[in-house]
Image (tube, rainbow, N blue to C red; front, side, top):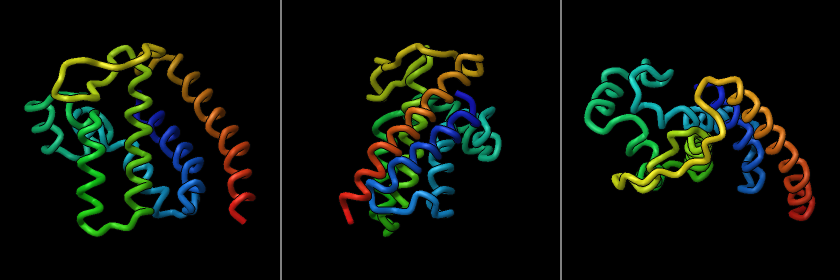
Length: 164
């Protein structure tokens, strides 16, 4: 998916998930971290939005490990989360970054290429619903965001009332 799609899906996912974690869905720091997490996996692609801003790191990762390799795997999200917790970052900050990151992985699983979640194993997982940059990508993003908004409204508000 394109960067704008990852950002929209990542922010919508954070806004829906934050209340379940007893965190503010509109805290600007958490929103920023969710946004960063939604783009971070593409640091392995020098022509991606984040890859262009992270050169030469993205060039080194791309040439040694390839695109949709380790940065698009379960190993990356587990490793990143453990590293941040070990470094003393607050639960809210780590949660926001991780949810953004996970939203990126979930969105990329909707493309024909899928993901190598068990990297370095070669098996890929995906649904082949849309090609990156296609008109169908926009349809998928709109449907996902509407679904997340509905879910957050139905279940998020119920949970918040139950917690009071």
